[in-house]
Amino acid sequence: MRAVLAFTVIVLAGCTAANDAADALARNQAKTVVNEVMQARFPGLNIAPITDCVIDAASAGEILGLARASVTEITTETAETVIEISTRQEAVQCYAENGLTLLGG
Image (cartoon, rainbow, N blue to C red; front, side, top):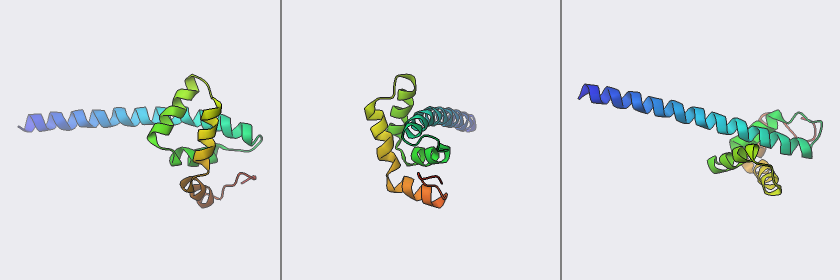
């Protein structure tokens, strides 16, 4: 019984590590899309910290959709998704907590 339990713990730990790696990869790919969309709207601004807030406010499905756009193409719909996420309460609160603004913060 102990061997089965130990095996189960090892398998679950492996699954968690694989899921964490997949999540990190998807988030990084999604960040490239958010960076591109935000840079096009706000040229010259350091939008990397803003991108982090947008990614944190996005759902898992939205992150996957944005990550997919990084290997296909950024469409008008993709850009609209980024802008919609960027105006959510969670994103706006993140900007405020980090002293960020789209006007040069």
